[in-house]
Image 1 (cartoon, rainbow, N blue to C red):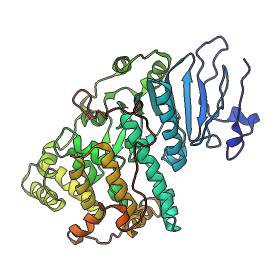
Image 2: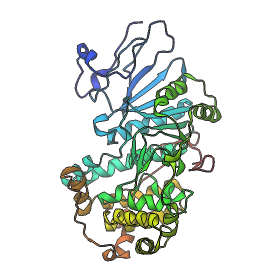
Image 3: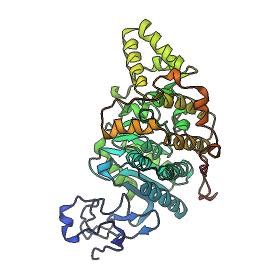
Image 4: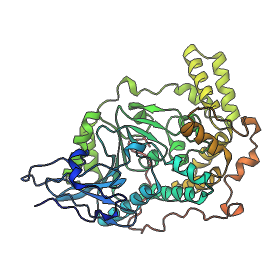
Length: 448
């Protein structure tokens, strides 16, 4: 069969087919005799566009195509792979990207797909997903178009909700940076596969937001006491095997085995979740000593307190009275907290506390109220400018001190949106039938 391109006219800039040999490849050229050549299509938030890849076709990797690609291996259609394709932005989630993912996940659930692999396009990948496209949100807000930022978070949170309850088992390949929106795209799924390249963090407080994408649900349910609160307030990074040991990943594999793992999932008939788990287990390796979590006793003694101020007080006590190792960890933790936006710290504390007793959808609704208000505060633009524009890493917050942030001011972030902004609340579940939905199951083998 001759290679065929169809319906590429949707591209923002039509690629020159004569130049394909100069572009990186998504699908390797396979001998015509091979029956299981991958097929790849581009997905759109409005339609499935048939950029069909038949045997032997070279498919270019370029933003000229689309930020989300879909791949499968005929004749097996029980497994589909959705590839994030914004490598220059570390696969940060834009609104079109979230729309494409949400629409396609919903369709695949209705088609009877049993496994959806979520991965980054590119080998080696620097990131699975570095978060939401906050630079775009910053630009929209700076121009007074706050509703554009609202729309991004609205569709992103709807996608998170769908992932939490859809019937196909999602397998996220966390080979690289996983931050913010990347966590929402993975942790709500059934399986999360970390490698030694994985770097996980929720750094929202550093740009005057609060950990979202359901973080008030999944961080507050981590087994280690105080660990979720620690990650929410500090933006601290977990690396490699630590991500599994924390319960944020379900499996740990070698980076060299990622490509083969995806190929096996694509080629195998997977009748149920047990079969998917069996394939993942074949590739699993030990996390080794690098997987050990640091400072767990300090975290337990401090981040289980009843306020941000008391957390800081406990940490300062450990700095003075703890062992040398404890003192060093506590001191560095205090320094991390002091870099965050004071208002965001108090909001994040309240969100984590409340989220521990809420459903995942209620957490997302609460977080949507928070983020829409954060986008209308000067601190957000101060934080993003400092982190991504000038990169001086020295934001001036208002208020500048935690003690100056009143409980009344924090409470307003949780109020119904009609009280002040008069925008629609986040609606969830309206696009999902009862046949697609299933209860969210946060733990696997006693881990989140």
